Length: 256
Image (cartoon, rainbow, N blue to C red; front, side, top):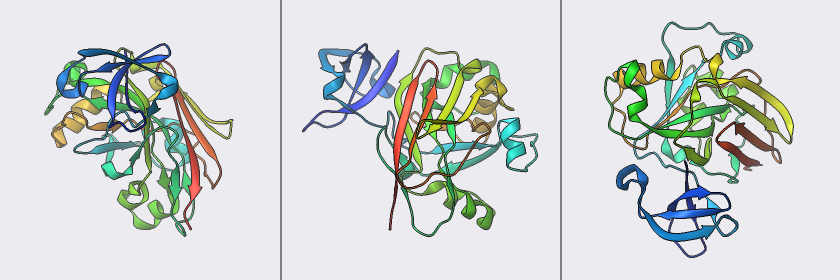
């Protein structure tokens, strides 16, 4: 089931189940009110898809989680997952621009599978990981690479407004263990990998992260990016596609 957050002209954001070419409108936020429908259908052509979730608490990133990406970054694989936080103000939705701040040097795309947490979660055992997940979406963990190297930590480099595109939907019924992720810039393939190539799989990530932070409904975990990260520039269009979920497309605009 694909859940979308959307708006129509003059209306506040609503939620719907994507059904071929229409959205079956939900009575409320499925995170808290389940999947009760109102009976209304909105043609997809009349809806603007928004970020499917705006985390009320946090976006958690996982770094260096594909071996070939570790190599291209000249890093070493750690025994524990490398985790960091992005502010929820970095989140934008499909077709919204990634805005490049002036004078920060190179900025890279990082296409990723994202986990959307569906319930309060603390100290979750690996075997119980699925019980706290609402579903999965697509993310682009945009990174100011020069600042990342200069600062020695990642908060500024990964935390700018618009540096966390999410969407287009949350897929609630997918096995995320072996699905294809591809990133294209202006149609040119830059990244391609299976989620089976993760160094730390999703059960491990849920167990580890929930031992550090209490996870709240709506929190998002970015599971890491494969090799092939590259610079993006003013006028580019970045499209991240994950089989079974869809494609997340965002133009790039420089701020002067």
